[in-house]
Length: 246
Image 1 (cartoon, rainbow, N blue to C red):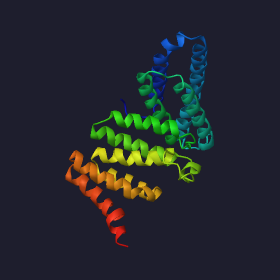
Image 2 (image 1 turned 120 degrees about the vertical axis):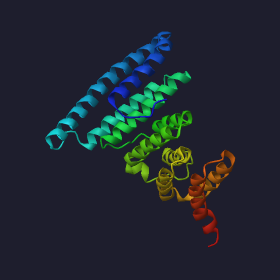
Image 3 (image 1 turned 90 degrees about the vertical axis):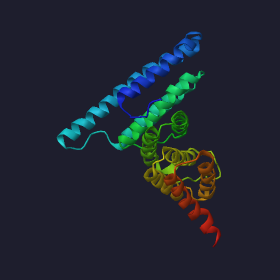
Image 4 (image 1 turned 60 degrees about the horizontal axis):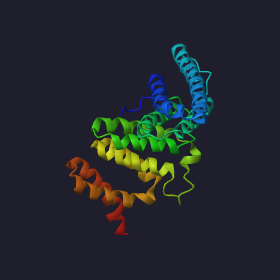
């Protein structure tokens, strides 16, 4: 599976891959076929808009002037893109289609982030990133995915980041931060671990003791390298052992 890059070419390829996976099933049902045709046209229009935004951004950069497309416009386009994605994902039934759409969700979210928009619909993005993470094993791939997840975290709307529904353990914001910390650990890159752990402890202090306790268990079970173990031990000591003494 490819690491998200948020290029329009990759987004276009991702849309086409999902549509191709869905077409045979849609051909078997008239209603599904009509829905897919409508979504195909909607995505074509969306890509036209995204191309214009990128052209506007490039022109503004070349002339060193402010671009005409503001962050509010990007947010609106991004929200529309993610809603279209959700409609597309609702037609999926085969695992192959879900894998393609996972990459598409991540690319759409990263595109929003890199164009200074805000992400208002987070759940499908988190689900897509989780599927990507579960398919990756190489440390460098996990490093790149963790970096992309960081950009997406920074673009999540303030309303979601306020995290008012803390009673819900599966809320997307919480899952995103925990998953990013796990991906950072699996990358074996201690600098990335430190950054992801700092964000985790800042936003989810109530989850940190359990996270680092379970992390230490994984250090033993999976025989992580010593530098990775030392970072985990440091945070485990800070958030469990040291606090238990007060």
